Image (cartoon, rainbow, N blue to C red):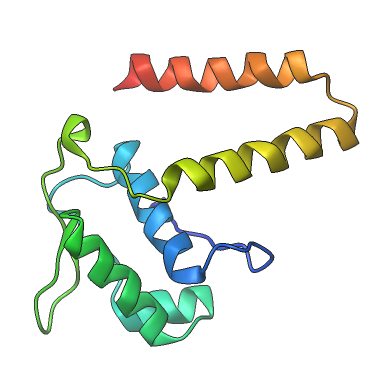
Length: 132
């Protein structure tokens, strides 16, 4: 199964940034590695049902961040990325906080104790630390 990128149309986060975060997540978790190719602009636009320019903007920003290489007539290629040297997107802290606040709200509304949510979060973070 190939790694996939998804978007949330209800999110306040612009779609191009959601695409960027999706790619960054796949790189950070090792699902995409150096040399892997991303879908073509057209293909990802069709897959996500978004405008071609939205995908193009996301890919250009990822290139600016040193995550992909763009070449005319070929797909975007993942560069060799040292996770320790990744420069965080300036808005990531804000985005993470918003996501955590939404998660807290969803947990409360679903009747899941916050202590259980905290435990799950620690498990996920520990998996990342152990898995690379």
